[in-house]
Structures are given as structure tokens and as C-alpha cells.
Image (cartoon, rainbow, N blue to C red):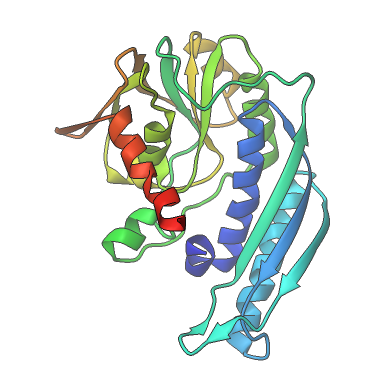
Length: 264
């Protein structure tokens, strides 16, 4: 909803690309999707306009990815005294691959860390802005999503790829935190907060023993930037400009407990 509140059309395209990136990060190719399209009262012109935009955005990105939407449903008139809900597309996507082995979303502690995909140019729709306030445009999405997704899947299938994790909600900061384990951490440096909290989908953090081959694979497809190295201490050491913060796997696990505790 943050994405489609900032930009219904671009946000819906981003939802489809995020799904495809999750699949590709495990070495699979997107095959088909189903959706649930949620909105407010379509008799209101602004609500109908937002709803039309999410339909168009999903359709365009799924067509670019050659991923047909084979089913779904619609839920409208979701209004309260506070007003209508944002135009909210929910998407489920499946993919296929030969075999069932896939790189884990957990660091091994043995490779170099790369982030694949062009860094965003804005923070609109991000969790960072939701928490800190302010506004910004929605980030520009990749112009070659099909080629990007196919290349991510190919690289994920290589023996030199030790772990993968897509970058989406919370940006690179959350991705790195989720990759931590008690046995493996990372020593990472980025330039600024935009690089850390931008949520442009189509990006993946890859831990690899052969970084040059990853760069070769994405030559002409997407940018590849070095983040640093995986470590064997279970600590994320993150440098942004002149500031460095550290977070260990135990602290991340405690923060994640908020989710089940809230649901109890």
C-alpha cells in the first residue's frame, strides 16, 4: 500500500517485479500469477482512477515478464469514516526451475557481497519515509525487467553463488539484517541513506566466491556494486559515509519477535 499510495501505476508495476525478483533470486523463472485487487468506492472518480492505474500497472509488468495472470478476484467499497483504503494489489506468483536446490537467504560467511540492480533515485513509498515523515517521488523502475529477472535466475543457479536475498521493503538495510545468522555476518559500506533505504525492486544482494563472473553476467543488463565481505562473526558492521553502526544476529532476532508477539 505504501508503494501504490505514492504512485498507483508505478507501485503496481513494482509489486509484480518484486514477486518475479523473489522467484529469480532462487534460480527459478516466473510462470504465472493470480491477484486480489482491493480498492475503495469506485463510484468516486479519484478512487476509480487509482484502481484503474493498479490494474494497468500490473498488466503491463506481467506482460513484460511474459507471466500471465491466470486468476484472481476484486474487493471494492472498502471505505470507513477515515476514507477509502489505498488502491492495493495483492499478487501471488509461481515459477519453475530444474531441480530443487536454491541459494539460501542466509549468509555463509565466505564470499564477497554484491548488490545487483540500479540504485533508486527516490524514497517515495519506502518504510523509511513512513517512519520518518516527508514525501518523495516513487523510484524509477528498470527498463528491461524481463532480461534482468532472467539474468538474476541464471546467476542464482551457479555453484559460486552462496546466498541471495532480494531488496524490497525496508531497502538494503533490512535485506542485510535478514541475511545475518549467529555464525555469519557482513562488513558493508554504502554512500548515503538513499542507497540504504531505497526500495526499488529488481535488486538482489548476492554472496559469491566469483564476483567477476557476476559482473560479466550483468554487463549491459544492470549495475553491480560491491558492498563488502561476509564475515564469520554474526555481526553486521554497516558504514554510511563517516558513521558506522553494528548489529548482531541476536538483536535482529529480538526485533523480529515483535511480529509473533503482536499476533498473540
